[in-house]
Length: 277
Length: 158
Image (tube, rainbow over all chains, first blue to last red; front, side, top):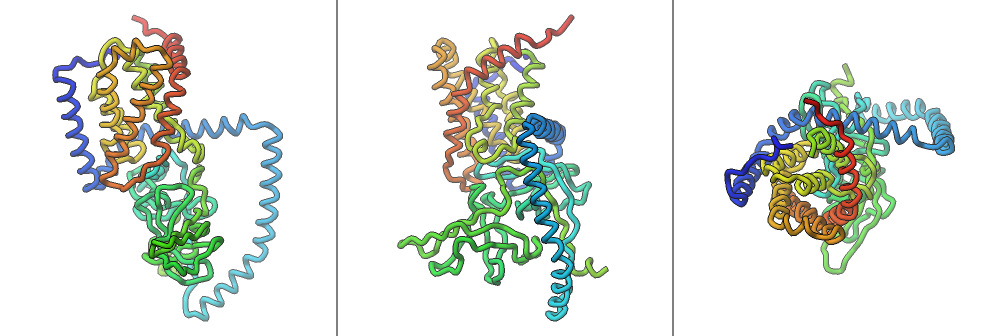
């Protein structure tokens, strides 16, 4: 690697200071100009593609290396789950009809959940502070900033950067994430915030006598219009009250397993207007 | 170090950064890119270019969506620290070298964390300590594997 091992015309400290100055400028500029992140995503495309191929090979080889007993066990669990879902599906037409009737009574209109597309993860960064994943769909497939992303279990986050072939999703647990929510079966407006922990979200500013209790399921409220209402977000795991603090600390476990994501569902929520057409 | 082996090494190192292997892996996984740079610097007779290392860090930032420049400058800082004591480090017995590798990996990860603090108030987390500790523990195995990779890498003809 003699080409990479360049001779050094400047003193080592000066070169370091120069690179530090460039890094500071780059960091400032990237924070002020999100378009730079989009450019970065475009530049990283070949590496992301390679990473996606390696990820696919990794999951294929790990499946291949599973023993026969493990596969039979997994098969039996999946069969049981299919049977349970088939039974639940029997009630679906009745519930759908009931739902339409109730919405008609409320002078509202039923909306279909919208179109979904399956995306594969090409890179992920799950360390605290910047919990983001990069997927293999981009603006060419109609992905847009703010788009809801789901996984088995519930919501995982929203799209924050889009390039032509890739998009970056900020997870629910990211420190910058905050999603309007409400308890299942209730109408109390809440926020579910990320705090840099993949297994624990928080509900800020809850009074000490909050009605939230361990086991309460939280769903998206639809406020803000970014997430359709009713998508599972998480379950309240603990409510801690300290004598000194004015608020209760509400810890929420995400419904989706954010630490072991493999496939992402991108949702194009159907607006009332489009569902009527 | 041979160019082909180095490129394969970096591709694999970038890949290990984004493996979906659960929360324990997130907490524990060492920075293989930093480990590879340390190996490259220690095994090469010539000094590495800071600009080349900075660009490798920038690729890592782009790939992971980190604040641009954070990984880049932290890798350069690690290299500056290594070159400050490199002749002494080369003479150290292997097990003492581990402590130095741990110190360098820790300096790299903590500096990247501090760099990002002005944008996001990230609290101290265990992976800042556990990742470098595991990285240092894996150092003997990694150097052995990379030595083997270099030895068996096909020679360029001509």
